[in-house]
Length: 388
Ligand SMILES: [Zn+2]
Image (cartoon, rainbow, N blue to C red; front, side):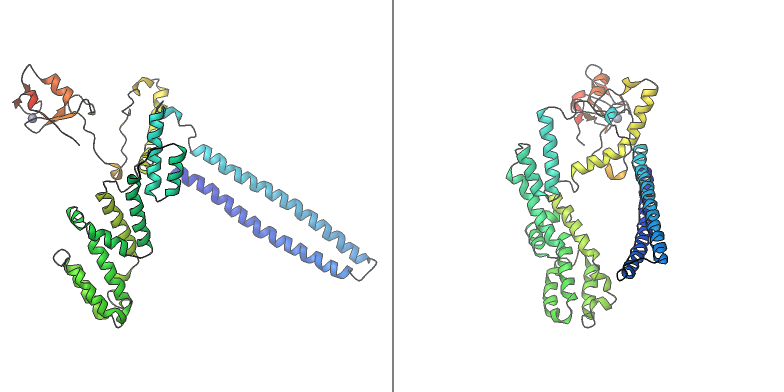
């Protein structure tokens, strides 16, 4: 962030200098053009130049020459400011990240295909279906049509919501009513509420329609009693307009942004997808992790302990990416102090303590194993594998 601000400061310097130069030079050039035009007018009728006219002409030519050379000089100065931006970028950003890259991470047809698929899925998620299609053709990817289908539907409904058309989202929510209820979704209520508010906004004309529509809301009476009270109360102000009533907040545009977020979150949940594209999450997490990784690489090189960073699945330091990037935790065995893997999974003992499978094997004494945290004994086979 600091690096970005440092570069931004240099860019701002260029802008202010450029604008200053632009104002100053166009004013100068305009003045010169005016004086040339007035001389031209004066000379048009005369065949010969008077002494005064010659003097004025010589002076003007000199002024023009001076102005041109001054402009050239200022232009050169502008160049030096621009080149400072480049230097600032070099100074503030690392341009060679190969030292912390894992060799061969994306080598081989299988890995390249996988990477292309991830990129393709990202485009489909963002609704850039034409780019995704182009990538599928160019990279010879095999992506089934039914995999595209959910993305198409998601974008069709979201597109309509952005145009303030609630119908596609409402019919989707109605047909997925039960599943939405299972995940405790408020989507259907919020859609009906928005539709109701939209009717209220049209004023007295749609009073009857709004009243009829409120029947859709009755099914949510026990779940959202307070919201329903507010909605019904707002009907009293139909005559003077909701915008001029104590209920003006109901017509705030923020509700339209909110419904897009709620729909995306719940639809992704039903489709078994994460709300955010895995690719963008990985890239953002990578950007956060890069500075500490670069630092540790430098320290390791200075102390010549490069051998520490050999395990490809594990980083030499723990990097805290913040709350937003904590997904499935990886269990670290408290005995062996290693992160568990598919071949060495976490095992739950009958007492409830969890250790890794390797630790369990090491601790088991013939037939029995004693929990390292409490003295309860059990058979090794009684331990159960747990999944995070
Ligand atoms: Zn125990």
